[in-house]
Image 1 (cartoon, rainbow, N blue to C red):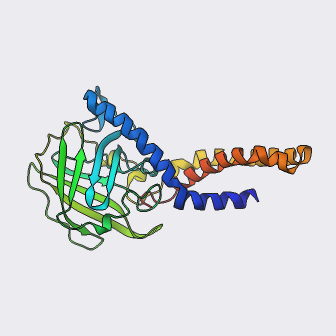
Image 2 (image 1 turned 120 degrees about the horizontal axis):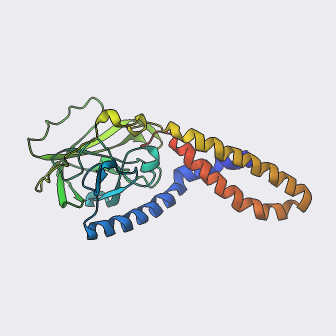
Image 3 (image 1 turned 180 degrees about the vertical axis):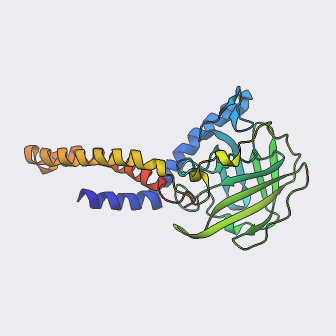
Length: 272
């Protein structure tokens, strides 16, 4: 019964209820970023503002992304692992920040955890994208959408910027490829940071539609805790009775099952 409940809970969590996690994470990220923007301490690149030798932790809030045409307003976080993308769109770490010279890449989920990029396929050429960072409020204009096999637009001119939004293509939870939205910077380009993270330093889990194998260890530990809880509840059922045990079991199992579900989600493609 507990195993069946776990499978059912994971399905409900991943497809419907994970938006609660996304909303909570976005509120926290927005509060943190708002303070840093006001104090002038928000990141300008892949390293800590006051320590250029220290990389930003994954999940650090960087910018606010707004696309009025699809009703999107989300905080962009550093990194593109499955765990980061549970909390919001993520910035690919080997590209400059939005608004800076060069090509910036932001990835986001198609359906799970709020599905912030679920409506990217409805964008049209000319739609406006706005990104607020520590440097400026930058605006982009959508060039076009493309999928596998479609030609890429010419690279931006020297000293100009471009933004590429990436998500899964196809039906929700059943990706058939990748969807790209190319947008050119129409506001004044900002100076890029003196250091960009080499692509070779990225982990494979930060690539589009990749899984995060680091989730296996916490998943095994949570699974062991679930097994111990099951054994303990079985013993309590014999000692206390059925209903008395379930009063304790429901909150305990709910917490463990949600934790297990989060780790399992990291083993799935990060753009789902």
